[in-house]
Length: 275
Image (cartoon, rainbow, N blue to C red; front, side, top):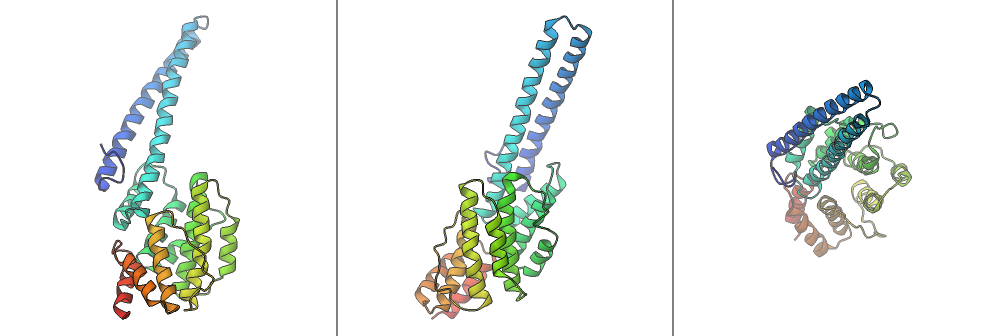
């Protein structure tokens, strides 16, 4: 069995999850039957303390199995997301989302749609990404507390970037206000929120106005994906500011990333133009 969901291909991921879910289902069924049997015994023999003890003894392992199920789901969520944010494997992550929509994993459709919009954006398919974005109402999304803020931050960044790329009407202040209103629960969410707050003005300036952003805040990336996107837009900013050496250095860094990212091809094209 895989030590991490990131290690294998989609079939390996399916096999690990299938095996785990099968084991959980069997043990839950066993302990449920045991618990029901103990309750029946206790009902028929109310004065026998062994009935109560037997019920408790069968309930505790059932709770332990359910706790392990939640733990495994959290590991899966973490590892599967890192396929995108750390490995930059867009094709594999798309297969993961496809698998989730078919498997008994209690798929959250708002979550899946936002991730599909993100994937389309990363491939440079801005129109398709916008179609996914339109399916989601950020004020009424049904997301788990752990994923709500990270996914909405992704939503607002992708939505804004799509509009700027497609030269549609956009409202930087409105997007920033929506991001600012999101409540963060931990350091990771705080870092992503700060990243988004800094990226939106940069994207608007270099793509929307075709100008360099002079008062540029330092942008800290929390993962490889954020780093690549940041470096690309910083390269564009440097190019517009006439800083060719800095732009060239950043374009080279981005060009070494996963080729399915649209910023990689754009960086390679920009390198050819810089003398």
